[in-house]
Image (tube, rainbow, N blue to C red; front, side, top):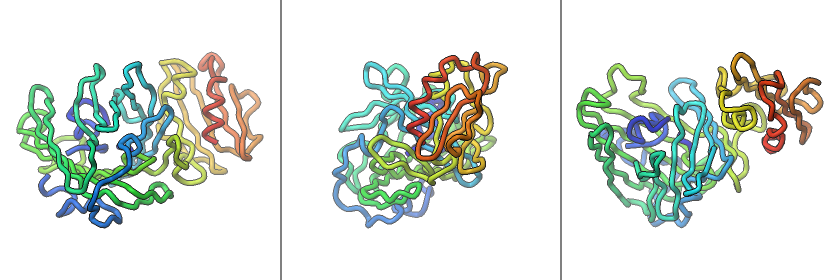
Length: 330
């Protein structure tokens, strides 16, 4: 649902791919965000937390177009105040959210509201506006709910009751854009998945910027508590391993190595590489049962497949703590 890439600018620009707010943006009408809805009269009866699931361990694989960029993200922490942190392979810092039945809100590390992502009631035609301050610049944004009854196929799973909305944020000339710029984002949220796909358009196209003027990102694999796993039955779209998973067991100095979203290998398995100082840790998930090397730091099996972590023991002294997670991914 992703989404899904940091808090550096306003929520929309910060993610660059994953959410936010042009008069001549995606399509000629708000309906351009829909993928099979009816125009969505009425209200959604689905609770907001179901449209933006954030349970510990929830994770997503997202692919962007044009291009072939793939990234991973997932829920990595929930603090004592209920603020939820999402981190991934493209994030310089965690994104944080506060979740209630009334609103899903992007917040700062201190818990201060940045942007309302979803707001109840979700009714076709409903609108809300907000202002975000970035570098002492006021950025007005507005959101329109387009459809509340979409049917989407997300990573091979058919989902009903999806909600689409359009978000527009208008940046005055200056920072972060040289010219006055409108950012339009068509977003689709599905129950049990979250932000399923988003198309971001900037007008005029940002000059000398890494941001694409027109880019779409969609979920191609997911594992969300209470939902069937989405994605192919094998490969990296199925076996999603987050950098934070290794950090938990091996230490805060562990960093993902390219390709950070994993590499499909033989027999439908996925291989991830991480660096801990000068040491390399290799994690393979989904290989045939019995194929793990004898010196693997931890090995698990299930449903005819196996997963393991290999490398020097000193690089991951807590490798055994990964066993429950690896088992769940199989």
